[in-house]
Length: 67
Image 1 (cartoon, one colour):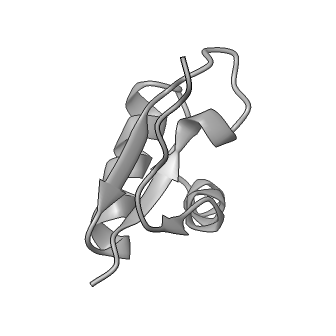
Image 2: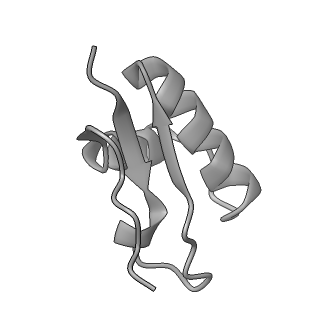
């Protein structure tokens, strides 16, 4: 099974969020990412938000930032 992830570093924001969220399933990842987007970034949980989150999903593991 391939893990999936969303990396906030890839999405421009005023907060420069460095969170990466990963899960074994798209459903689990979507729920965690939507909660993060609402609670941390102040977005509303809408079909448009979930569509953007789905587009930001990758297969594998997020890379470590250099620093």
